[in-house]
Every structure is written in structure tokens, then in C-alpha cells.
Amino acid sequence: MIDWPAIREQFPVTKRFAYLNSAAAGPVSIPAQNAATDYYEKMMNDGDVHWNEWLAQREATRAHIAKFINAEPDEIAFTTNTSSGMNVIVDALEDRGEVISSELEFPVTTLPWMHRRIPVHLLASVDGEVQLDTIRAAMTSHTGVIALSHVQFSNGFRMNLDELGEIKSDHTLVINASQSAGAFALDVKRMKIDALCATGHKWMLAGYGSGFVYLSRNLQQQSSARALGWLSVEDPFEMRNNELRRRHDAAARVELGCPHFAGMFSLGAAVDLIDEIGIANIQERVLYLNGQLTNRLAENGWKILSPIENEGSRSAETLIEVERPAEVVRALFRRGVIVTEKPEGIRAATHFFNGETDIDRLVTSLNEIRR
Image 1 (cartoon, rainbow, N blue to C red):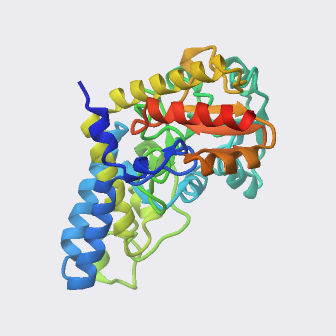
Image 2 (tube, rainbow, N blue to C red):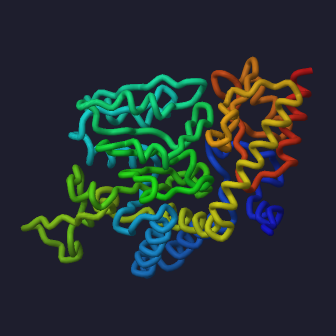
Image 3 (cartoon, rainbow, N blue to C red):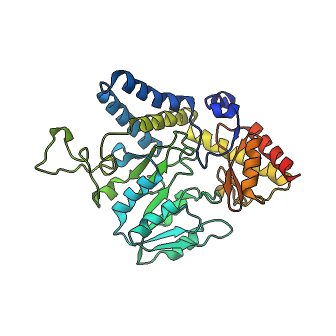
């Protein structure tokens, strides 16, 4: 049995708030904070003497993240956010044809392609869901990329990536995992994902300035990096100016200069905690809490806009219809409840550190505001 109350103690924010906002930015745990602080304390007290130690720790973290999504270490690069990761992916795929995406998407999934003048086809949703048949029908001789989020920020719809991988045919599958990494299991090999990016500041609970990108070995072999830095070459410490011998791993495309160690180490500690709990246990927990939340909301007459009739499409995000969302968010904050304002209402996110008391606090507060 997992001691969820003990895990909750690792997140001091829970002592002050019913924090239901991980879909916007998740709180940092004590271990993640300690990992970043330890780096800064060493840099403050010792300067650069720990450089080799930090490099080794970076590579250990890279291997851990690779295992986390069933990839290889040389397929993983550290980023500072989803945008940087998606642009690396677009660099590798800008000659693969037009892009199939969805009207539900967060713009970082679509805008980088449009910036390169690559046509993006935004598929209409059906009852708040992206249908596999709609994706299949959009695949033509002109399209070559399917770029979608695992979980949609807009309404919480969760795509079945195993089924999507089976229908992708000769298209390259690109996944924005920012709303799922840390809450739902990811297996890039089984799901036939060619490229994936995620931020660390949402469900991974590692804070701003952390993230990663995955590029399959096959994709790396078929494309070249657009940008490079002094660490993007073989044997960079030879300091050669007279020849260019590029590295071909994913890191060489992103980690162009001296590393952002604090973000990497915080992300590593966050993944350690996720692994300690078990991603399967976390997925079960967040879905259980989401079910408890939607049941309580429905019992109290609140309209749920997220697609939840199909349990396989449910995520840990719930979009709730309210009038004057900005006012409601402020009123909830005054009652110690933190959620996200959306055009249609408010979004509540249930992560593994949350509990039934947070749900009770949200529903009670909403009922008070309604009166």
C-alpha cells in the first residue's frame, strides 16, 4: 500500500492550498528543490571544482529519463521548456511534408511548423475528442507528420497513443507530452513515437527551466541539426577550429553550450520520486481522484466540459463550466483553492499529491461562490 499522505508531505504547498493547478505549473517537491539547491550551494562555496561530478550526474539523469519513457540515452536531450523541444523536432522534420494536428492543441504543437511555412491541418474534434478515424482520413500523399498532444490542455482529452501508433502508417508521429509526462505512462517504442517533447514544470513537478526532448535514433540518422555549439562536436575539449566533426545524438542538437545543471538535477530528482511511487500507481491515483472530482461536481450541479464518458479518454484535468471565470478563480484563491482560468470556465488538475480534502475544498468553495 502506498502512503499517499506521507508523499503529500513532500509538497509543502499542500499545507496552505488545495493546489489543483499542475496542468499550469506543478509545485516542486522537497527532493527536487534540494537537488537544485545543492548545485547552487556547491557553486557558491566551491566554484567550478565539481564540474566533472556534475557532468556525470547529468548523464545519470539522462539515462534515467530515457528509461522513464523506454528510450535510449542518446535519444534524449535536456531542454528548458516544451517550445525548445518542439523546435528541435521541427528542425529534424521540416522536409517531411504537411502536418496533421488538432483544433484542441496548445499552440506550441502547431506554430513552429507554421513558422517554417509548413501547412498544418487542424482536425475538428468530435464531442471534445480527436477521433482516430478523422486522423486516418486526413492522411494523404501530401502529409507526412502527425503532431498531437497526449493530453489536451484545452479540455483534458487523453489520446490512446497505442492505437495512434498503429494507424500512423508511414507518417512520423510527434507527441507533445507536457500534459501527461509525470502522470501517465509513456513508452515510445511500444507506442511507435518518433519524437516527443515535454516540460518539467507541469506534471513532472520539477519547476520552470526544465524539460526534455526525445528523437529516435532512426530520425537522427535521417536528419541533421540546424544549430550547434562548441559541445556539439566529437571531443569538444580538443578545441579544434580547423574541422567539424558533429555528434549525432539528440543532445548535440539542443545542449549547445554549458549545461543548465540546476534544472537538470531538479528534473532528475522529480523522476526519482515518480519512479519510487511507480508511474502505474500514479496513473491509477490521478484517474481515481479525477473520478472523485467529476462525481462530486456532477452531484452538486456543476457542468463538466471535459470528455469523460469514455474512461479511456479521461485524464487528470477537468474543465468546469462557470460564468465569469476570472472572478471565480480569484474567489477560489481567497478560499485557498488554486485552479486555472479558461475561456469556458475553470480547469482543475488532480495530481498524486492531491487528496479528497482538496476536492472537498474546491466543491464546497464553488457552492459558496454560487450562492
